[in-house]
Structure formats: C-alpha cells, structure tokens
Image (cartoon, rainbow, N blue to C red; front, side):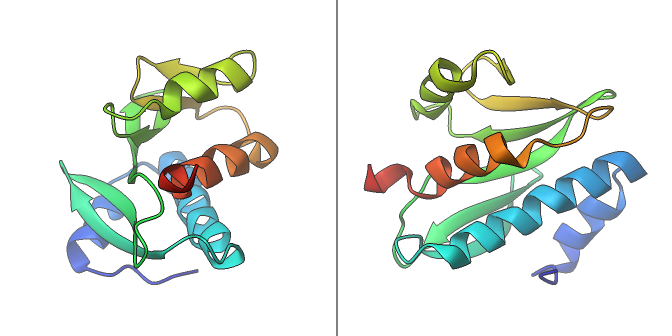
Length: 132
C-alpha cells in the first residue's frame, strides 16, 4: 500500500466509516497499481481537491484527475472532471453494470463487492484520458 502523501489526506480517510475506508483504499491502491503497469501513464500525484482525495497524472499529464469520496450513506463514488466526456463514454460501455451521477461520477454501493474487471478499465480510461 502506498503511504499517504500528507497528513491532511490521511485525516480525510481516517474520518470515513469502516466500509467506505476499505473500499476507497482498494480503489486508491488500484489507481497506483494501474499507473505503474502502463508506461503511458504519468506518475500519480495525490492531493486534496474540494476536500476530496484526488489522484492526478503528472509528467506526463496523461489523464484526467480522479477523486474519491463518500457519495451518500450507502454509496461511495469515483469522481472525474465534469468537463470531460469520460462518464458519457463509460455510460455507453457500462450502463448496465454501473450506476452514474450525471456527468461527474461512478457511484458504487457499499453493500456490493467492487468489480475490478469493470473498474480497472474505467480507472485506466481516466488515467489515459489525454492519450486517446
């Protein structure tokens, strides 16, 4: 597991309920793993944007930033820039497999296991958004 880059980010994760923490940490880990597996993905910079943990590619800026957070008491979410067309593209591909919020997020139920067969592709598309 990658250590948190700042105590502020660590504090955000520490304030999540146990289920949200575990799921968001799994997604966070996959972001780093997927980035390391693809030479076209820039290194990952972890920061806080709008109070949410954010993962942006740098050197090169290959992707659109990914933000992770609780969506509501029963869901977590993977947020991307609403200025991108990524959610629209993912909705076309995974409309029957995933739930979305407008043009900004993939919404995941906390009572269901994460489907990394689908999520890995979604995350990789975000990490390589500017390469396509």
